[in-house]
Every structure is written in structure tokens, then in C-alpha cells.
Length: 181
Image 1: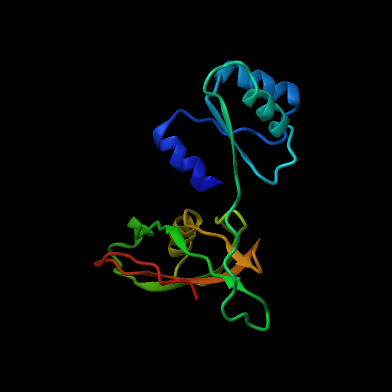
Image 2 (image 1 turned 90 degrees about the vertical axis):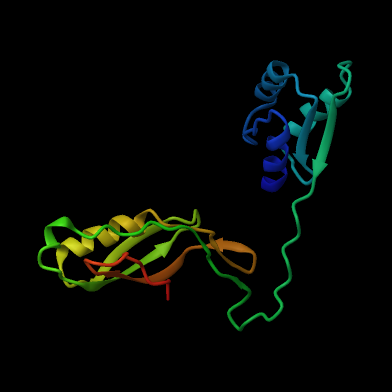
């Protein structure tokens, strides 16, 4: 559905609807928007379907209701003993900033962080396992907190994932974080 929404949004004015809205709220939104089409999930039990059907039968010319089915999850080609795992992919990377207070010392080192990728794809519950200096800890945590991932899936369900990250610091080179382990 998200892909369909994005595709349609590129070519038309669109507005996502809250599936928790009441029938009266949907009717109000529909009368304000006067849409020419409304896309609803085929398996939706929301009152949006009722309002959508009434919209389809309304005298307004050109109104249509389109139902869309979410794509079926791909079968797991080699399910491991623990199930079918869809690994997280980093979609936003933020590089750490070398602490200005340490520039003259030319200190370098690696900060090891343990945390979780939440079901929303954001880092959470982070803690530093080791660090050569407290200033590196803050810079590493600030950068990693901004990272975003596609969520991990287990048997088709989104789950939190524990992750260990190594963030390296050197005063004279582009700073980079090691890939998650």
C-alpha cells in the first residue's frame, strides 16, 4: 500500500486516511476533498470501505473506488532453525564528528556500542561497551542515534534487533563507522 500511495502521490493530490476515523469523520473528509478516486485495502474492515462504496455510487461523475491488495511476503528460500529472517538495511548514515577538544592530541580509537534497532528502524537502548575517551563516546552515540534502518523481520513480522557497532575516530581522515556486526 505504501508503494501505491507514493506512486499515486507523484501524479495526483493525495491524502492518507487514518483507519481509526469514524464513519462521520471519513464522510467529512470525503466531502471536503471531493476525490475522484479512493484507494482502500482489499482486506480492510475499516468504515472507509462503507464511505468509499457510497462515494462510488454518488452522482459525482468520475468517482471510483479502487481496492488494492498488499503484496504477499516472499517465501523464505532457506528457513534457518530460528525462522525466516529479513535483515535490517541501513537507509540513513550519519558520520561522527571528531571532538574538537581532542584535535591537538591527535588521539584515535574505536568506540564499541551495543543497542537495538527498533521496529521503527531507529536506534534505541544504546550503551557504550568500550571507548578510549569520553568525548569519543558522546560523538559516537550522537551519530549512531541518527542512523535509520529498514526494520528486521522474523517470519514476516517486524522485530527489534540487538546490534553491536564499532565507530572509529582518527583526527586526519574521514571518519567512518564500521558496519554492524
